Amino acid sequence: MTQPMRRIATEEAFCLPEIAAALKEVVRAPTSSLDRILCKGIYDPHPDDGYSKSNFLEGLLDIEGQRLKQMDELGVSMHLLSLTAPGVQMFDADTATELASRANDTLAELCRKHPTRFAGLATMAPQSPRRAAREMERAIQKLGLNGFILNSHTNNEYLDDPKYWPILEAAEALDRCLYIHPRAPSDMLKGPLMDYGMDSAMWGYGVEVGTHVVRMMAAGVFDRFPKLKICIGHMGEAVHFWIWRITFMHTRAQQTGRAPPTKLTMEDYLKRNFVITTSGVEDPLALRYSIDKLGADNVMWAIDYPYQPMAPAVAFLDQAPLSDEERHKIYHGNAERIFHIAAV
Ligand code: 1WB
Ligand code: MN
Image 1 (tube, rainbow, N blue to C red):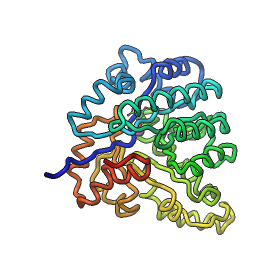
Image 2: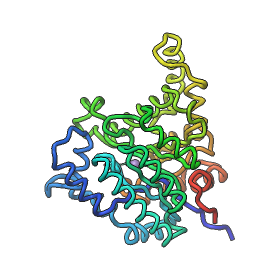
Image 3: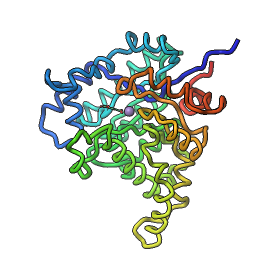
């Protein structure tokens, strides 16, 4: 008898009531952050706006109820859980540090209780980089979590800034992948993204994370941390679709002195230091290109629950025209290796 496919979904969001309450407070206070639009919709919705009907908050807070039931019904073996965007990155440093550690404790408890159904990416507060690095150590060594998640910029700053390098150093030293999930674009990028729903998943998210990782590569971050593994979701946030031009023009920018020298090309960094997930993109052509460009070992399946419904994400990868070997790698083998999830 053939075994059922193990399906590990690798970018599955949750929230805690106390973090939802803190986000509600943040969006009621004055802030220039573009995240306010979406966070207000989810955490402080007005009864007649669209978000009150979306049930995202319910889906984020429910872990062992409807979520698990749906996973059972659809044959989703495991959710690799992560605290939803913008994580703790809109709070002051002390609040963020405290809430990150509480989120990690809760996540570890859920993973211990359901070891074959949930794994978890630890969160941290980049506002306080050295405390973040200590929390990262605790999350792996004491809590047994599987990797890390960070939601792009912090106070409009990016990880090429050396002040954040304790976080990169810790991820590399602990040999755990750092997932860079989007949040709404920084204040410098936000202007033309404020209308038409362009702030978040439609466009802003990809622009934000794409900008972030190109900055990191061009700054030479991966010469300093050659073993660092970064995961980007949403089918690689399109970076690998542009990589030929990014590489060509980066070399030119180096020749004209606009970019510092690097040991490798941008395409080399992308292939050596990055993996991607399919979260929120159910397009077989984009999947085919991703596998051919990055290799079947570097692409993982993700749903993006609760922002994306589970059933079509399962149907997408069940039906995508892949070889058996590719399907196994993308559904579970790569996640087991990259996120240190025990094989069954
Ligand atoms: C949405 C998508 C909202 C994502 C999110 O809030 C996140 C949305 C944090 O579709 O509105 C996501 O991760 O793709
Ligand atoms: Mn997502």
